[in-house]
Length: 386
Image (tube, rainbow, N blue to C red; front, side, top):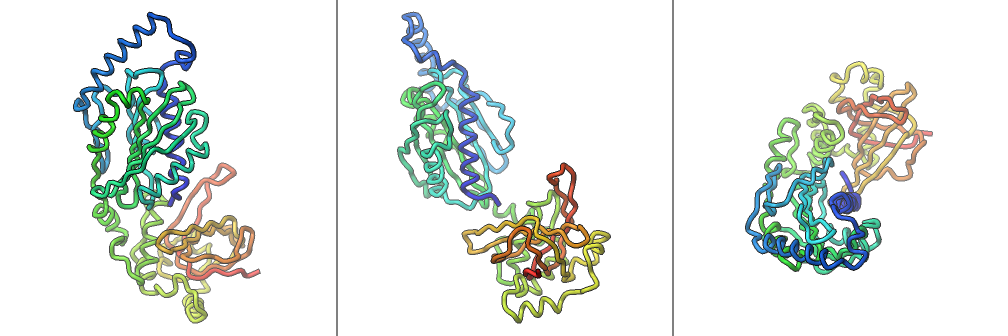
């Protein structure tokens, strides 16, 4: 559940990295007046590239998971070893020191294209692009309603080559993901055929809607994103969170059904609901029982107490607040709880009591370099107890 600001900043840093690693010529080439022979060579190169850029219909297609697009057939794979960059290509015959390039990044985000564009502009205007993106200036933003997409056009000075660069970013939401296609041309190349190429690339960009795929992929863990109700909301949150937190994990059907059947207890906010949650607790179940065998307790309310090791809250556009609370109990066992409400004044190092239903085991690397084994629970109530 990454925030929009983090996702967009990541995209900015990828842009910087790509333009840096793909600058195949020294900046010194533009720092002094060229000799006549250099002028002639540059003219010949520009002429050759003009011929290439004047035929933007010569393309080849890249097909990724749930998306595809066409790009100039002469461009080469940038071979970036970055998982979030699902495609990256560079022009091996640029018109100058700056290497024209494109990349596609997919980030989990509920942002609209215009929101993503605004965050990008704010960050790059404030210098988030580092020394390679100087004098950044937004040129234009265009909505593309027929594709629910948006186009951000910007200009900046490339700090290494001193070239003026036209950056075009195409933001396309798809389910819970945001696709960002970023295309960078030197202004010379952009004005000399690159603009048509940029338009062709964006026009060719297609996505496969993932809403049905999300339902299919979650069919086994009970998730039903499009059928949210008051009764299944917390169950759906947990069904969504668990596979993100734990690879190849899913919410058990017993736990899902318990959340649905006792939906008014997740969270239990009224005195009556809190009293009912306490009554549901089996006081004989401890963290030692859970660590021995979790299966018998997947539909049982338990109570655990301990010191808060870490606590994080995040608010979402849908009006939902989700808190993640990591505690260590008196038996030195680790428990991580997810609570669909603010935790108020509870902070790190506070001693708290949580009531909830265990959902799965959870292992993660700790600061000491080892592995911490934990139980993940859906939390009904949480309170300071010391």
